[in-house]
Image (cartoon, rainbow, N blue to C red; front, top):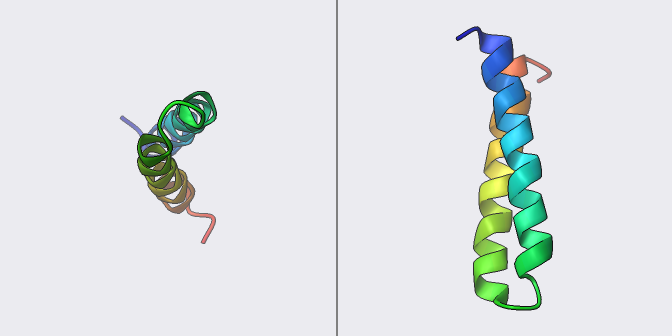
Length: 53
């Protein structure tokens, strides 16, 4: 795949993971924090892959 598509895919994945954090917060905060970390990593990876920094 093209580099831009990988970056876009990672940003979309970060959005889905962030939605999971929102949904899981009341049920399991430990899992929500773990998902939040994954969402942050995916977002940073997507931004770096797109070459913004």
